[in-house]
Image 1 (cartoon, rainbow, N blue to C red):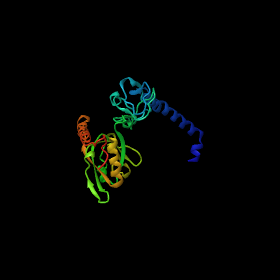
Image 2 (image 1 turned 180 degrees about the vertical axis):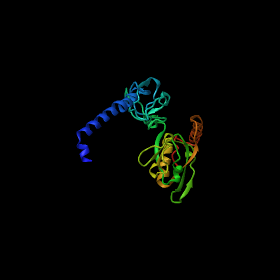
Image 3 (image 1 turned 45 degrees about the horizontal axis):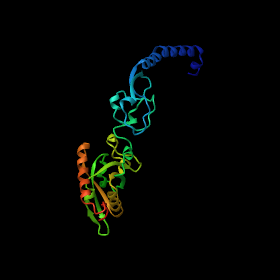
Image 4 (image 1 turned 120 degrees about the vertical axis):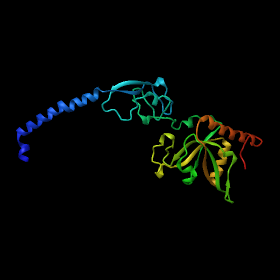
Length: 251
């Protein structure tokens, strides 16, 4: 075998066969792949992270299909009306990992001073509805083992609150876009819930968390219009039961 490879005639024939193979098979295949035109969605102006993607920010162009990522977006309908999960620059082809149906942490930029975002700890798997809560849910919060008497409470001021994030211990939020994740992994399970509440409700939550164990129950999941009806009911209760001075703090 060694003599065969040292034979110049054999090496020459092998080189010729390899060259023919490249010219007749490999090169045409690459050329065909390069010439295959594919439509992709490309950024036309800078899109900051968490911004809503509008029609004037993108365009559809044809490019060579060779070496394109498999998750490049080809349909503008899958981009327009979504939120950028990272800052996108003009000329970028948009990948499906770069847009989301919900703004990443966008809720933190929409606070108007009337309500605050506050996180509460999930002490065990069941207390967070077994990891099934999603952004936008309307939840009810109950308290177990509260105070020296270990009472179980169902605070009326926390009957309907909006969940704006369920977050695991690595800081990743659970959204409906993550429905394909393997929920069996323990590190994917939420360890905190972030809710939108009034400052007075926040004080109650701090007290209940420090002196008891909070449990979340799903009250409603659906359209924003219907969800708002639950929040309006809660707001009405807080207004009607606010003590003199406008504060709902106190027991």
